Each structure stands twice: as C-alpha cells, then as structure tokens.
Image (tube, rainbow, N blue to C red; front, side):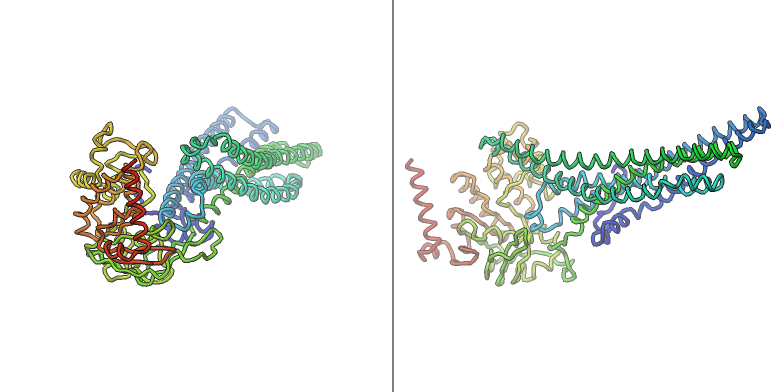
Amino acid sequence: MPGRTRDNPANSFPEALNGNPFRTLWRFNRPYARRYIIGAALALLFVVINLVFPMVVRAIVYGFDEQQLTRGHLTVYFLLLVGTAITAGFARYFQRTRMIGASRMFEYDLRNAYFDRILTLPARFFHRTPTGDIMTRATSDINHVRDFIGPGVMGTADMIIIPFTLGLMLYLSPQLTAWALLPLPVLTIVVYLIIRFMHRQSQVVQEIFSTISARAQENLAGARVVRAYAIEDRETRAFETVSQEYKRANVVLAAVMSFAWPLIDFMVGVTILLIIYRGGLMVIAGELAIGDFTAFMIVTAMLAWPLVQFGWVLTLYQRGAVSMNRISEILTTPLEIVDTEDTRTDARIEQGRIRFEHVYFRYTTNDEKEQEWTLEDIDFTVEPGNTLAIVGPTGSGKSTIISLLSREYDPDRGVIYIDDRDCRQYPLQTLRGAVGCAPQDTFVFSDSIRENIRLAKPDMDEAAVRRACDIACFTDDIADMPEGMDTLLGERGINLSGGQKQRLMLARALARDPVVLLLDDTLSSVDADTEREILRGLRRVMDTRTCVIISHRVSAVAHADHIIVLDNGRIVERGRHEELIGANGVYTRMYRRQMLEARLEQES
C-alpha cells in the first residue's frame, strides 16, 4: 500500500496465528478499532438524524390537520429537512470511508501475513497441498473475508437503526407496533435454516473452486507436456467437468441467496400491508391521529432497508466465515523449521565444516503414514575447503542430504553439525545465508538474467555477477541474448534450454560467495566439453569453501576429496576416486558403464 510502512504481519500479530478464525479477525482488525468505532458513531449519528425526518413530517401533518401551519412554519420545516438530508449525507460518506478504508488495511495485513506464512511453511505442507488451492485462498478467500469485514460490518452497523425505529414506533403506537412484529418469528426460523445451508454450500463452492484453480495451474505450467502428448481434448473435458460441478454448486448457492432477499422483501411487504390495514382502521375509529399514522408509515419504510440489507449481510457473513476458516488453516499450520529457544542469535558459520552423525530421515505421505527410511544411519565429515561427492542410483537419497543441509527438513534422528555446532542452533537466515545451493529443480523467475543471478544479493556489483557467469560458462550464452544481461526471461525460464537454466542456477549459487556450496546434479544437462570447462573453474572456487556435489556422472566427482556411494538410503561405499575404482563395487560398475557409453557415443 503506497505511503505505508508496516512490519511483517506475521510478527506484528503473533497471537493471530494460533487462534480460532474470529480471534484471528480480531487480532488483525484491532489496530483499526478506532476507525470502526468512529464509523459506528457516524452510523448512530446517521440514524438519529434520519429519525428527525418522520417527526418533522408528523408536525407538518398535525399543522395541516389543525390548520395552524403558516408559511413561516413551513419554511422552517423545509430548511430543517434539507439540513437533515445534508448532515445525514456527510455522516454516511465519512462512515463508509472509515469502515471500508479499515477493511482495505485489514486485507493488506492479512494478505501479507498469509504470504509470509506460505514462505515459512515446511516442505511437507507443499507435498500435500495443491498450488491452485493455495492461490485460491490467497485471492478469492481473502476477498470474501474483506467483503465481510468492510461492507458486511458497515451493513451490520447500519442495523443500529432497528432498535431506534422500534422505540419510535412504540412511542407512536404500541398496538400498531405489535401488529408490525407479527411476521418476525416466521422470518427468524427461515433465516436460521438459510444460514445453515449457505454455510455448508459456501464451503463446497470454495473447495471446488480450489480444484479448478489447481487444475488450471497444472495445465498452464505443463502446457508443453499437454501439447507434446496431444491430450488437449482430454484436459479440456476434465476441466469442463470440474467447471460444471462448480457451476451447479454456485447455482444452488445463488438460488438460496436469491430466495433470502425476496423472502425478506415479502415479509416487509406483509408488514406494511398489516400496518396500512390495521392503522387505517385505528384512524377511522379515532384511536390513532393521522399525523402519528403518517410518521409510523415513514418509520416502517425506514425499517425496511435494514431488514432487506440483512439478507445481503447474511450472504457476506457466510462466505466470509467459510473463507476465514480456510485461511486460518494455513495461518495455524505448524511451522516445523523455525528458530527456537536453543538458537544462538550470535552464531556465525565461518569455516563450513560439515558432520552428519547417525542421521535418519523419512518423508511422510498425505495420510501421515510412516514410510521406509529415506536415509538410514548416515555418518560422514567434510573438512573446511574440502569437496564431498555423493553418487548413487536414482532414489537413493542423494538430494535429501542437500535438503537437510539447507534445513528444508530436520532429521528424524541424529544430528547435523556445521562448524561443530548443531545446525539447529544457527538462525535460519544465518544458515541459509552461508549456503549457496544450485538445486536439481531449476527455477527461473520472470525477470532479467542479471536479477535472477543476484537474487540473494540485490546490491551485488556487476563484477561479481560476471565472475559467477564466467565460472558457470554462461557468459557466451548471455552474449547471444538479445539484450545481454538485461534480457527478460519468460515464465520458469521458458526461453532458456535445460543446460542454460542449470548454468544460471550455478551462477546464482556462486554469486552469493557462500561458505558452503551445494550442487545437486547441476551439470546433468550440459555436454561433456562444457562440463570439463565448468569443473576447471569450480576447482578454484572449491579450494576456498566446503562443497557437496551430487552427480550421476563419475567424471563430475572424480576430483572430489571424498566420495560416498548411497544405495537405498545407506552409505555402501566411501573413499577417493582411485580407492573406489579398485574396490570393484557399485562405484566401479557405474564408472565402467559410463566409460563404455562415452566410447560408444564417440564411435557413433
């Protein structure tokens, strides 16, 4: 929001992240309580001013009836009505700006808190939650909550008029007021039933919308795969099926919502008919003055709008309640990877010595069932300035070690030490700031090449960016780009090849000058010549920092100071390249197979 500087919402409202939805709403709106109070006061002023109108009309009718109304009296009454209308208009305007403005500020805080929470949630959360569902909660659900907090609360404040109008109606005619309240019990029962149904149906609608968003996101992200397999028609039909479900659920909800408004209109109409009939009889019988009857009719008409508005507020409330529940599910999701009371705020990583001590780890599925160990009794040490290489078959747990080192996960058993300190004692920002990671899953932001490289250090100088690109053998590719470093990349780097994206990831990791460098199969998509050139440049970098390299290619790890071979989550071999070749084990078989493949490729 322009012109406003705010703290991180998740830190500003820590209580909001551990309560029920209504407590969360209160915590987020508490800073704007003054605005809501002023808005409610202005709503009360608006009501009081409006109640002047029927009493003035009553006085005018009495004057006409008793033939005592003069031109001067009429002028005074006219000016009083004009002043009342103008004052009421100003009260209504400032009430809206206070309350609607507060709801927009609340929306700003809630959206930022939600985004901050998403960034800090554990990786396990994203394994079981579709991206489309996360996006729906960030957009549609937050909008529904804001509609309730803004127009909904304002509409609720407008209902302050109800007790005042009822009081004035009782003053004018208690008997006629009793007739006016006859339809109220029926209305109450029907509204209660509508509320229950709308709550359930609103939840169904939002869940189906999440499914639609997830399917749309998957097809947009995987558009090339869809086209490559010529399954456009199948995906279109599947999307249409979900859309039909969403349409039907929305039609049912709209039908009930549409029924609520006419029902309230009907009850208001019945009330007015009762008043006209019974009040007319009372006037004819001389039990009610014509002035009181006229004022009573005006007050009843004033009561009609808040009752009709009640149906609208009811709709906003139900959607807002369902949406707030869905948002609260995210805000109250436990954070697994956090700084704790054992964290040392002054701890710094300077040498980069890594030690895994009997580490065990396993992933969990959506049903939270325990799986087989992904890593089992992993034990190794990497001295500062040394390079550890990890090799092994697909699914042996290599990338999991990288994830544990960058604390995407914590081990289920055992301890990971960095500089002889449990890595959980380092503040997360400190730990991740000292680690440069080129992950297996290359992700490129829709920004320029330069900004993608200096992602971790926006103020990085141009020379550092160039050095990183030179080591990653990415400089020549940049020179061929239409605008060099300023070339804008498409979504997920669609205008880069697989090898170019990997080298961009490598340049990004090197540019931050980390103490610990983690390379997860970073050279799998580059050709052999480029790989050798990159490795030559990397050796100069690796001499001054601790490195962990994962690769399927033996050629990429032969230079490492220490190599471990994983199989089914266990270390089955360890040693230097020459030692492992002579051991005639898994590593030897990998080496011979790759050498044979290389010779066959050259001969062909």
